[in-house]
Amino acid sequence: MRTAVIIVAAGRGTRMGGEIPKQWQLLAGKPVLAHTVAAFAGMQVLMVIHPEDRDRAAALGVPVVEGGATRDASVRAGLAALEGTGVEAVLIHDGARPLVSCGLIDRLIAALDRHDGAAPALAVTDALWRGTEGRVSGTLDRTGLYRAQTPQAFRLAPILAAHRAHPGGAADDVEVARAAGLDVVIVEGDESNLKLTYPGDFARAEAILRGRTMDVRLGNGYDVHAFCEGDHVWLCGVKLPHGKGLLGHSDADVGMHALTDAIYGAMAEGDIGRHFPPSDPQWKGAASHIFLSHAIALARSRGFDLGNCDVTLVCERPKIGPHALEMQAEIARIMAVEAGRVSVKATTSERLGFTGREEGIAAIATATLVRA
Ligand SMILES: Nc1ccn([C@@H]2O[C@H](COP(=O)(O)OP(=O)(O)OP(=O)(O)O)[C@@H](O)[C@H]2O)c(=O)n1
Ligand SMILES: C[C@](O)(CO)[C@H](O)COP(=O)(O)O
Image 1 (cartoon, protein in one colour):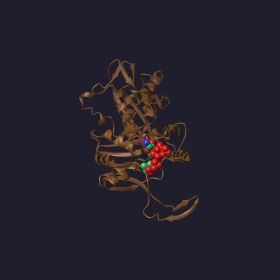
Image 2: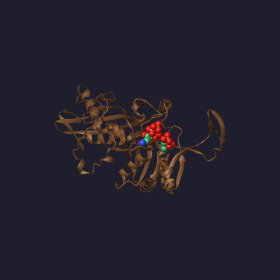
Image 3: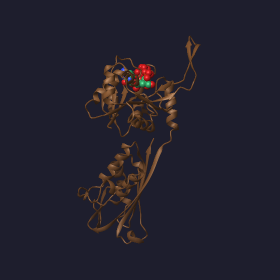
Image 4: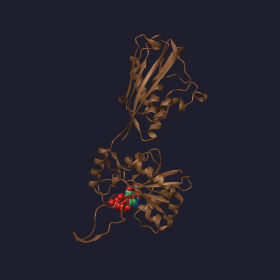
């Protein structure tokens, strides 16, 4: 089912206060909405914003539509914008809930296969009182009561119809769906998926972010290319004049191939051959930055970024030392990371083996991918 995410972010955050609306305030150094958008990495996202926030929203690089004066009017604007685009299902999420987890998103999508709607909630575990003028004036039975969260997941057509038929004033989309007779299943919510509502919530969210374990993946790559007749070699994106060339289907950049394989390896995504088969003539003579760019883009589409990488070239000649900094800069440029995350170095094999006899060049590479 083609699924999109609507992030509603057109509110003014009056209970939170502050100079700018809460969803644009900084949480652990980034706007709240940057965390929220990142939580849905790899999915189609549409953000619903207030007209005054257009400039702020541009920096997040996701499509936007303007919302309305109430949350349900904003949701309706998002749903209407997806009508007729081929999207079949939607996750409707509060921009003010930046800590939604991949596990929760997966649970919702799985549940939507069997129900009209699926929404996360947590059973109420505290006793419930009614209070009047600061005094307890009654108690309530908490049996069967839940605290509702977002994202709330639905098929697009029925939830859009339900919103159009609703008089307005609903607390959430489940209320709208139920008014239209849709069946909504409760999936296990997540205590960390809090909504930033009052000023103290920022400190709680920052504490949760600090405590979150990073997801770190490690990959390695190894490659060899034999020398052939020629007058230059490509190594880590730099063309070096040499008395021989390197034999290969592509430009035979052995260092860049080892690094690309390390990144695919970190994602358990095989190697270059799986993504760019040597049997396919379109890759004949291809520049190897195409492979490296593809590998890092695939990692980013899954919410990862490069932690660091280290490439070692094994050869007697050409001498790598004088060119290592240029290679480092080129690899960093291709992957759009700071140069300090990229290491390029070389060793000889003390004239032993095929590299020592100058029959070819070998390269090994290690890369870490990090998802915070
Ligand atoms: N007209 C509105 C009102 C709310 N929202 C969004 O709905 C989510 C949940 O709403 P809430 O936490 O109540 O946000 P605000 O309405 O901004 O807060 P307040 O009620 O304190 O003003 C938020 O991401 C908010 O930006 C929206 O898109 N359009
Ligand atoms: C949709 C919601 O997040 C469900 O808990 C919530 O109802 C929206 O925020 P509000 O504080 O009720 O306006």
